[in-house]
Length: 259
Ligand code: SAM
Image 1 (cartoon, rainbow, N blue to C red):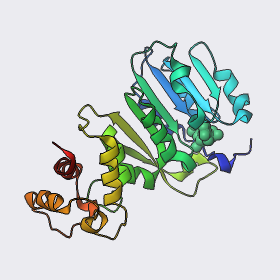
Image 2 (cartoon, protein in one colour):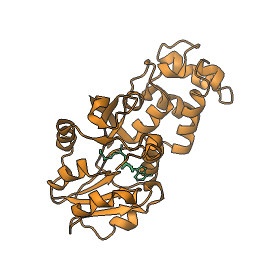
Image 3 (cartoon, protein in one colour):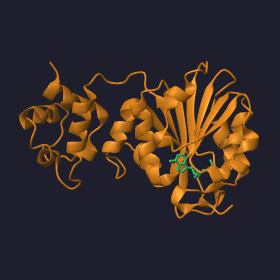
């Protein structure tokens, strides 16, 4: 079958990598795994060996010829756009302990998929995804690095995000233009207590203009309060948002909106 570029189809062909991804998912027979974009089933076949409940969302019905054979009483393929799916409804009758979401994601919608999953508010234990290496860097970046931005803080609010390993573009057919990486999201138990609308707006505003200082980007906020927080941490008034850790953003948030 000819891969459809428009659907981000780059199929994994490196058995070692498939094995490595499979090994990083700790699910057992009492758990539920949701796979996004099973493709021809390269990873699905391995996942099935865990004997967990497995639900896969694939948009392309042409792949039925590969995927039909993988369906059984614990494995179900749903031919649907993941972004239009009703996961809660689809899994409501399955009894399971832990929920894992995995996939070699279609890169044209990596961030929409992850945001969609976060907004569903499912009780997910871990998510393990193949993403573009550059995206993995952004998602797991530390402050004061060029990859750090508002998406880093947004994702790390919900999950501890770790880049597990890099994957060469030659592990795929067709060979994509970019290098890839496996990234792991582990549910945070110490999620800060904030009003998320206000907190994420503050972060988005802080990073609005990359070259501008925090002070310039946050002109609509009470800057005297922000300045006090910066002084407390011995930070310069001309600092940029990318220098600030989550702890400092939380301090700023509390000084602006806390009681
Ligand atoms: N898991 C397979 C593998 O590793 O070989 C295929 C991975 S391929 C990078 C991405 C897969 O996601 C393709 O099978 C593609 O058809 C599917 N896909 C693309 N957009 C999708 C969407 N909106 N919802 C569900 N699946 C989608």
